[in-house]
Amino acid sequence: MTIRTRFAPSPTGMLHIGGVRTALFCWLYARRHGGTFILRIEDTDRERSTDEAVQVILDGMAWLGLAADEGPFYQTRRYPRYREVIDQLLAADRAYRCYCTKDELEQMRAAQLARKEKPRYDGRCRHGAQPRAGIEPVVRFKNPIDGEIVVRDVVHGPIVFRNAELDDLIILRSDGNPTYNFCVTVDDWDMQITHVIRGDDHINNTPRQLNMLLALGGEAPVYAHLPMILGPDGTKLSKRHGAVSVLQYKEEGYLPEALLNYMGRLGWSHGDQELFYSLGEMAAVFDLESVNKSAAALNPDKLAWTNQQHLMRRSGAQLAPYLAEQLTALGVDPTTRDLAAIAEAQKERARTLKEMALNSRFFFSAPHSYDDKAAAKFLTAETAPVLRAAIAALEASPAWTAPSLHAALEAAAQRAGVALGKIAQPIRVAVSGGSVSPPIDQTLAILGREESIARLARAIERRGGGQAPGAG
Image (cartoon, rainbow, N blue to C red; front, side, top):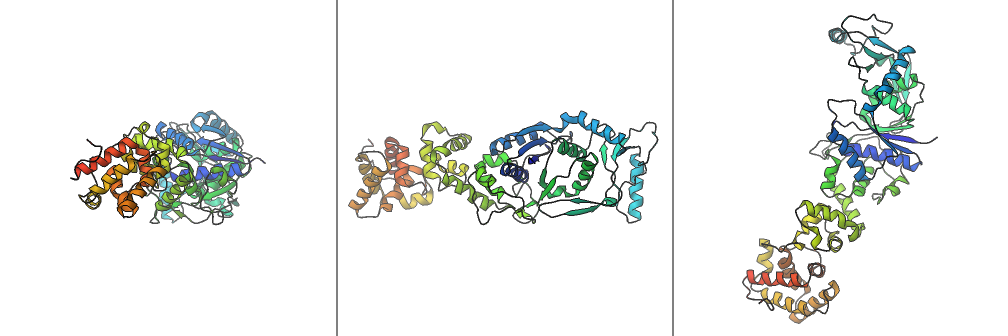
């Protein structure tokens, strides 16, 4: 049997991390078993579905690298197929036309509630109803009345539903549009889906869909209903927690592999392994049996830590294109510096690429001002001689490389009888505007000889230390 999974988002909102985890698990399971991963857009809710949301789904899947083997398929383009199947069910007496009015249904519900019964359609049109003038009927599925339907669920175990508790579901509205549960069933049947992996908010839909699938002559798939993702405070995930478009994580500077690594570990585990540096590495060991039954809580700090581990593992050259995007978003021209060198110097100091870009702006423009606390400590009249000595040592360096610059500054510190940090920190503040930067030899090497000397001289002048050597 060829494993066939599907990710079937509704474009009624943005693709957020809950959907990302579902897509990831579907993709991983198909890849683990040499199967097929299908992307299906369930857009039958025309009032709420938007082209923008569809594009976010497509762009998000592309950014994440979760390429579909088939699709995307759109339900709205399959209406003729749905109507064909409805006709088959009507002909086989597995569905019927219902002419009940809205008022009649409301009266039925009120009477059931008054009797303290579960509100449900009572099947009054089930055995044949005469057409009524001026009323366009709906079509209902004839759900089995007796017995039970058992959902085989890998995560939760077998789930048993009594058919008597399930009413006759509307499968075609009076306006001629098929309903969600029916379309899902036909799609899964036609596309030969073997494993339905989705959120556990769909559990109550499953027995109805399964009964329809069996009525069509299909075979029951294996189900895996994934537990919810909660916010850090244990409440339902919302926008304030991170239920935002997946592309916002791209804007915030997360690597797609890091986001997927974190989402994969949110509710699933493979021993104690925390880090998976590629989709292939995760797919090689992924299984549904290790998915937890309980809800998982989003931890932004753990996500940022995971991203940092991925950043540190990448080379500066690999990170350079991502850094360029972030710098451009900040209004910085990334073409004026060696981005690979900057990324290499900064990758252990940033949790996200956006943070890396923000911390790297000083490479592209000299500081217009200095951090007050840092300047008060390191840019004083007393440190001016240190900076002048540093300029002299740097100008005498035989090469403008990090090792050569380090040796020059270390020699200057020895001559002055001070530790290297006593020279390095005033230089750092002078060239970056603050007290934090990559190692000073790397920082100066990236800035270049002319720019470095100019910034040091400017710092001496601004702090009242007189004219620096070579600055006239």
